[in-house]
Structures are given as C-alpha cells and as structure tokens.
Length: 63
Image 1: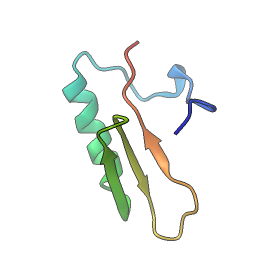
Image 2: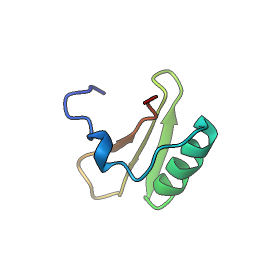
Image 3: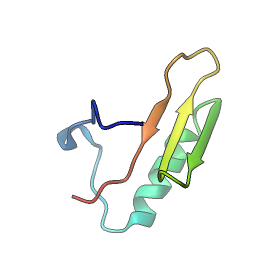
Image 4: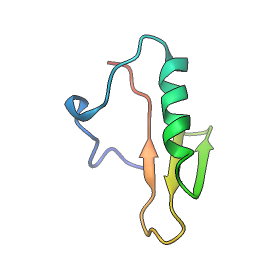
C-alpha cells in the first residue's frame, strides 16, 4: 500500500469526531464487497469483488 494516489479530503463523504464512527462507516462499505479484510499491521481495510483486479483500500486519517 502506498500514498501514491490518495483520495482528496473534499471527496470523502464526511469527517468523524471519533475513530469508532469512521470504522463503523468503513465496515459497512467493505461489507458490500464479496471479499474484504482488515490489515492490523498497516491499519487499513481492503475490499474487492471476486472478478476485480484491483483492491479498494480504506484508511482512517486524522484531519
């Protein structure tokens, strides 16, 4: 995982006061994919559908 093409903050659906709030939103998003997981070492969620070549990465960053 790299920060080569991070999503600009203005494209994010919202900001959250608590990390737990952001985690809840991410877990709902990744739940809609066929394959998903969480990498605790790098602290990010990933998701993809079975036929997809690329993974979607979800990261919580303080603003």
